[in-house]
Length: 244
Image 1 (cartoon, rainbow, N blue to C red):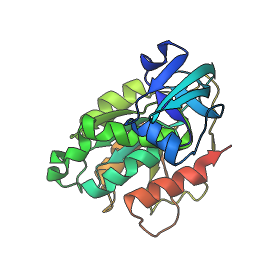
Image 2 (tube, rainbow, N blue to C red; image 1 turned 45 degrees about the horizontal axis):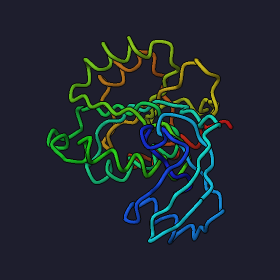
Image 3 (cartoon, rainbow, N blue to C red; image 1 turned 135 degrees about the vertical axis):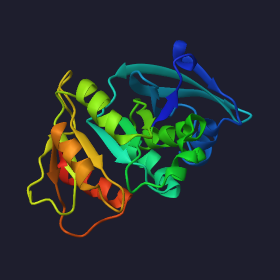
Image 4 (cartoon, rainbow, N blue to C red; image 1 turned 180 degrees about the vertical axis):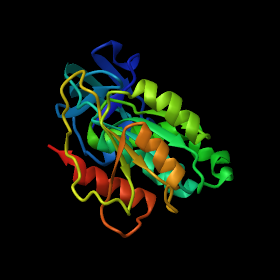
């Protein structure tokens, strides 16, 4: 946990008190080994970052005086991902929040099992703490927006074309002839359209799906002719595309 995050209501006053049983207080005591007078990195969910000075530690409870005065790192990409196996999707939530995603759109595809969508790993209550874990790790205050669509064609033709019309769009396909990957700034200018990366199922996109994505403005790219697992392909492509 590289930044202690507070909800806006908690940060309404500069003087914040964490109960002894609060996981953030436990982290400050047992991991950061902070003492009275020490300063720690803090942030407001959806708001500013800053620092807080610990003013007292009594019975495990921690009181601090916080100042929020620094903008958080902004997200730099959107992700369209064909629903992987639930256990894979579960382990991707936190890393995606750490890497700087704005929108995560989970969609069905021809090679996605329908029962994957019945899993609890797509429930908001399950996702929220994992996203928070990723935010705390990377120090951002931005909470990614998650949307789930079971049907592929309406998503691409209606939602993507309308809401992401100006975004540069990349679709990962191991048999693409394009070798060079585009590069995008991880600290984009305010108001600039963010790139969208589309990651298919481990069995690959069908020709029909690739055709729809192409009509919607997606350019096919590849990391080579070795098909990769969903999570590995996502992280590898983002690393290759990041231009900081």
